[in-house]
Image 1 (cartoon, rainbow, N blue to C red):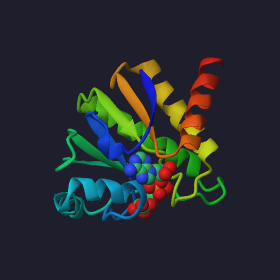
Image 2: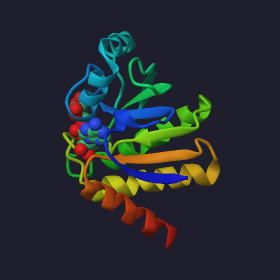
Image 3: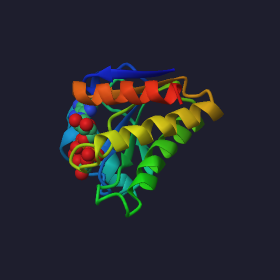
Image 4: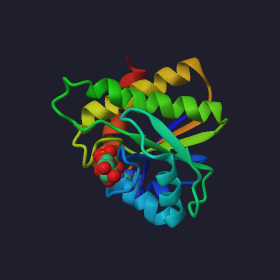
Amino acid sequence: MIKVHLGDITRLNVDVIVNAANARLLGGGGVDGAIHRAAGPGLLDACRNIGGCPVGEVRATSAFSIPVKRIYHTVGPVWRGGRLGEPELLSSCYRHCLALARRESMRSIAFPAISCGVYDYPPSLAVEIAVEQVQQHLEKDGEPQSIIFCCFDAEMAELYHAQLDAYVRR
Ligand code: APR
């Protein structure tokens, strides 16, 4: 089941929240900053021990003070016009997170709009990729059974609703 939620991802009652991190995995602004603030200093120590994450991949940590099972740190591409592999890298973020959630038997996962803030990815293009990858995953595999697109503003939520409707009508 796919849902669109408007609010702060650190407040969701799910098994996994996905962080839109950077390759150093040492925190930052946006959703990365919010997750580190909510999780507490233990998260930064855990991320330091991982030593970074390539763009398009995912690394998992505990959630520390956030009452979820796992945090999946994925690194989206910076938008550079769309001809330098950005779509493939953003697709890879969703695919890797969903495959890891499947492997770890997580029942629910919440995604922020990866790369749509500081990394400047055009939201309509990013949302199209997010919906496509999640739908493709669910056509192959029923787990995780609950996938939430967590939006921080109403415009982003509207894009997800429109894209989900369009996907169903394809
Ligand atoms: N909950 C849900 N979504 C949020 C939250 C939150 N608490 N805070 C911000 N967002 C939304 C933004 O509004 C945006 O739509 O998350 C989306 C992703 O934006 P960013 O957090 O800026 O992430 P991204 O564009 O992937 O850039 C990653 O920014 O914060 C740094 O360390 C991070 O270097 C990395 C870069």
